[in-house]
Length: 495
Image 1 (cartoon, rainbow, N blue to C red):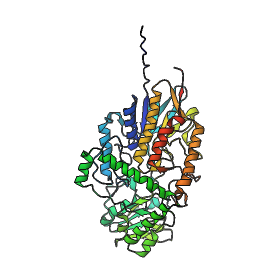
Image 2: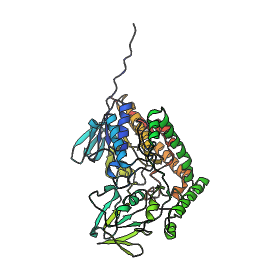
Image 3: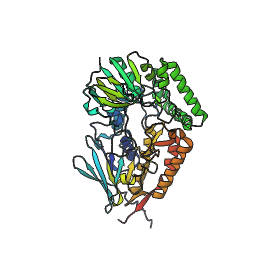
Image 4: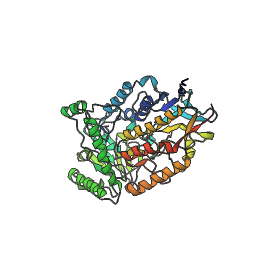
């Protein structure tokens, strides 16, 4: 008699995804492609898109080439070498529609806490409306740059003009004929300043510390280029691969002692000398620290905007605010009508607005009391079946979209393992600690410029670099695909 071996039915796994930006979208697509799991995506905003929904300031665009700042699973007809905010938002919507994700997304729904049930081996997820939902797995895709950094300048509440953060842009404010101040000279400010310069009466740009600026060389793709990328087999993939290959060489400059570092600094200084007209301004915008200590700014029109007669650089931080202006650190008062705060975000406060509790009710913020850390930047020991996209030490790698895709794959592979039977997955704490030590050693050896003493957003209060990935994306791809089973272990439990 022939015995037929029947395959055991696969377990139905329920997944809750927090956030419908590119991270949450990647997680949903990978679950759909690689598992049979059911999932719900919770988004606190009225629409999908994450940072590209929130940020709508003039000049808003990505500073990574479009063909790299996109997912491998959907070919797209990009109009520019560096996509602008409206097109990036359309791209997010196109992915959602192409993969039929809309029925799975709950908009205007903020998740407040996620608590692991030790007996039932699942999570109870709660929303700000008081609803509770049960999931076997939770994936946080809240992003890194989503909590605005509002300065605590004395007198800010007394300012009688209009003030707002760049991530909460006031489209109802007409800046025509107004005296405007932009505080900050990072990547966002370098887009805002030329974006509004032509429409204002006067513009003050407050700089706490200069950053290294490189020309982005953005431009529209020609009709011929777009035809080739749409119709020639492999053309877009080849171009994408070339961009990632070039990023490997670029990362070498993060070694503060390398020749690549010298070349980068020289190129940036040359750019200043040939672009900035005023000698005092040239001196003020030239950093005295290695390239790569701060996130390099890619901007082709920022310096040109500083040359305009009605635009002035104030190379001093803001000390306080009055009813009608700003006082800089020298004590000089500057009268303004509109205050634009390009003061960044709080990237080292991971999951700041989410209470996550794992085994024994332990809070993830207590686990991170000394430093935020995660295996592969994705999982944390003691928090079973919980995955973080854009977690500790994953920023960088050239394209964060590619990084998010790798992280979503790690989560999907773990869910696939959970489908084989009862149990959960958790991270071995010893392996997580070894991984973190390796990250620290890689930063020290290959990204020493990040540790060279300037003000950047990379470091925890204890001084550890907890945001940056120490390499190009290829290294992260290899690490996630080789190590995910070593550190993330399935723990079986009786049926």
